Length: 179
Image 1 (cartoon, one colour):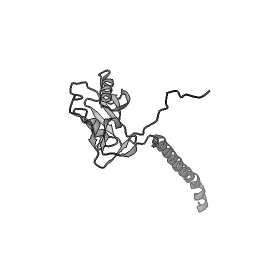
Image 2 (tube, rainbow, N blue to C red; image 1 turned 90 degrees about the vertical axis):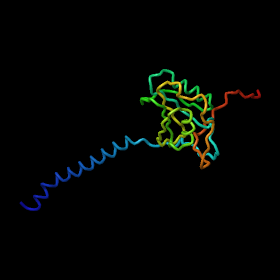
Image 3 (tube, rainbow, N blue to C red; image 1 turned 135 degrees about the vertical axis):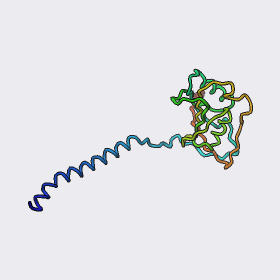
Image 4 (cartoon, helix red, strand yellow; image 1 turned 180 degrees about the vertical axis):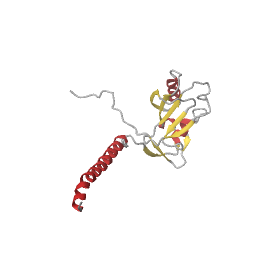
């Protein structure tokens, strides 16, 4: 058997092996690309210079993670009465027994301000970019939200906070036009 015969016999299996490696890499890359969610900056928060953060500057979502029906709505009403902007009320699949406050970071002034409204709240970060704060609740108890002693503002140590982008809503007031 000559070198030429050996080369001819190995050419097809080597070509197939190279093609299988290229095909495998393409499948891996495609699978990874499908699972990667692109990060949108359309709803990114806006950095603002402030000395203190007020409830009116914080947007929260209230999510019920327990069996107490209407608890999220009750908490939303209480937070609205305290001056917070409530953007959504709903449910979460996460089972919650004690309040969980979720925001961009546990050191975020908005997270700390909202957490001051709940007894025994756990803080959690998820690196969100929109500046909102989620409140996960699940068990109704008399000491869930104290009637007094909650903060009405929080000092911002570095003088800057990332707050949700304010979207302008069109005016519903008709304007007078000359006929």
